[in-house]
Image 1 (cartoon, rainbow, N blue to C red):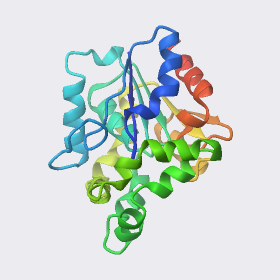
Image 2 (cartoon, rainbow, N blue to C red):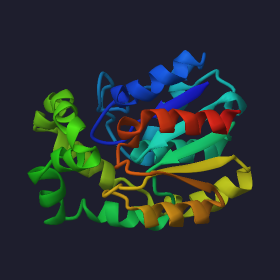
Image 3 (cartoon, rainbow, N blue to C red):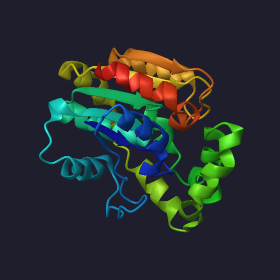
Image 4 (cartoon, one colour):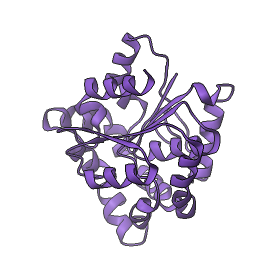
Length: 236
């Protein structure tokens, strides 16, 4: 079973192009909405531990060794934490930092910086730069309500402020010790987390890096066929 977990500021619908391809091959999928996104209510305390507890409830009763975890951006961090704690059949991280690479993201929650990163743009610029031009209008329209929610910038800031840097720093060693097969899947034209971040992440995890040429931050939209093929390669 695949568990596909999105990042910010989107929801589980972001996986639809990849999910449809995987289902055609007979795969079973879970594509939950992170708390505060889609149909999932917000957490009272949106820190990594709370997201981890939420994920554990979603996966209760499912054997970790049968789960192929696929995460994007912050969703990838939540799944990396889960894999380090409980193991997994495999872990695929798309444009997901693991380690102290999250420190600059946490810094965006600081006074003054948060006005620029959250209150002024609230994720719109991130989305607009995250896909190729012909997909941009449709992506912004799909998440128009989320971006227009006056409370959402503060939720994004709270998630950034709740990043536990000590826990993030321990994750690479814990994942290596677990021996979870890990793939770092990166868009070659990702402007949010540029490709050198992918090289650094893969090296810190002892993982394989696969680049999707021309794909941007939301590589599952820019290159769904290549993305699905990469996942199939992990599970074969």
